[in-house]
Length: 418
Image (cartoon, rainbow, N blue to C red; front, side, top):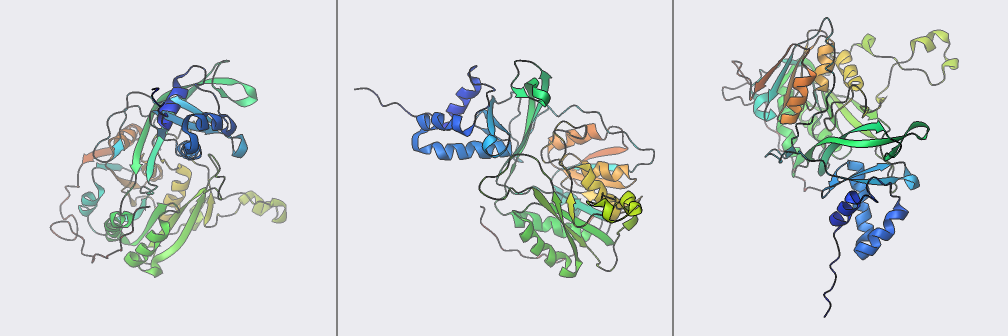
């Protein structure tokens, strides 16, 4: 009796495509992939293609194969590459650590710049160690709870007539994968994770301080209700929409290409808003406003258009979810003053620290990810920066001897993970 042939898994199929010289680096359209998937996986072909498309959007691997995409809509092409070696085991924090941080020139330190303090560890006990009312401005960009791994693959391209990429004027380039970094962006109870940290943020703000929470559409509405409880509804000042235009387009809904930044003032009648420090943007119809206004430009609204960090730009550190300096510099200049003390307790690559220090603000940064600390050590090598392990040892930490906040805890209902 002939033994029944076992169907390969999608992981095995893609690994073969990535290794086979005839298909490695090839750009597959959906029409190219459909017969391959149907022949190998049968009825599961549609689900397999959906996984490929999702992996390309998230730049995350399927098994040992990395998936990337080029083009939009029906012109989208998918490329499969072998997983780079040298990735360290995933630590207890759920973050993958790699030593291959992008090599980049540290930013030039301005003549007048602020100091930077970086604390490594769980941000909750570190926040509890700081004195109440000790920060003028707090900005945080926590994980968005997407439920999937956030990853970035770093590549180098070199001119090669037999290369796997086509660039400007049809020139071909060879792609070399340099490394990757990722972290698991999933919390079973996101609100319960955020709540005590946001309460600490309220405690740490000065009476005239402002708080900015940066999230995407998945959690921002729940977080808004929670912040109304912590700060009071009257303290909500603005919902800022940061729009950008990069990456693949969705084909079954409007493509989500914006983040939301919520601004709360601890005292809605007393906060910093430096109108004269707002950067100007061009008028869309300058001929209608006259030469003087057109030359000066207009102030932005609560809808900010700003590109993401360029994958090949000098600003890019290679750290996942890095936010652009342009957006953070606007927040720093308008909502704080030189000499103020700023805080970001989900620091990541340290962009908020650079934005603050460049404009003569002192900044405290907190992150538990060793890769984030490595990136910041390199990034701040030209600045007056110090690095610490664990909570601050400053005397008088917190409102109580054990570091607990004096603000009553608010209970938030649990939500099942999606």
